[in-house]
Amino acid sequence: MRILLIEDDLSVADFIIKGLTENNHVVDHQADGKEGLFFATTETYDVMVIDRMLPNIEGLTIIRTIRASNVKTPVIILSAMADVEQRVEGLQSGADDYLVKPFAFSELLARIEILGKRYNSSETQQQTQLQLADLKIDLLTHKVSRNNQSINLLATEYRLLEYLMRHSGQVVSRIMLFEHVWDYNFDPQTNVIDVHMSRLRKKIDKPFNKVLIHTIRGAGYVLKSI
Image (cartoon, rainbow, N blue to C red; front, top):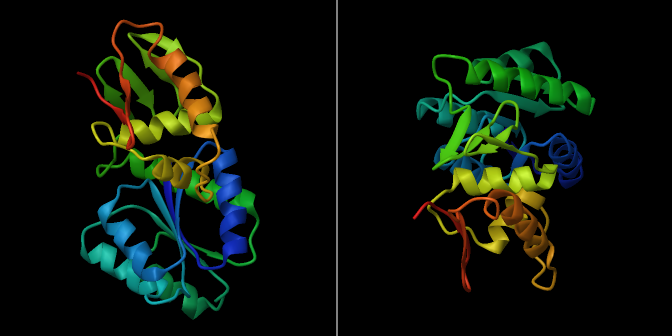
């Protein structure tokens, strides 16, 4: 699943990102309420995890704003504010769940996956499958196939392909891949993207007649069928 995390405590954010990434989820992280609101209203996610106390725009305002904008994506509030009245206020703002800090990651993961599956199976479901030409990804099972042939991908290869598929037809820069697939600062000296992209191409393109992953010199990569 693709998850938006809006959390200004970087140690908490790193803890969550590490755990979700290890469980094959893609995480977009924002530490600022204003930036978080922008992503929440302009990008598509399966679940959002939002802290209450944020700089510039606090969490409940973000939730009320996205609900007013008809964004139905499930939201989990993370907060140290644990009083019953505070939890009720959070749920009444439009959140689907409320988890009090400190929390066990296993509980957060379970709540995220339950909400994500429930949302994907509801009448307002988002896509459970991505497809470009004969390339298909099942977002629930993480199964990948091309021309009806199953393709086994490592966890990072899967996240890389999912991000490319979600942005098919768009040029994706190396910085974007670092931020959304690996989620650490861009290092122009590293070749980690080149290595993983080479491995992905060997599995996605090499056995087939038509190339889908294209390099745009000086700009990045694009997944397209031409």
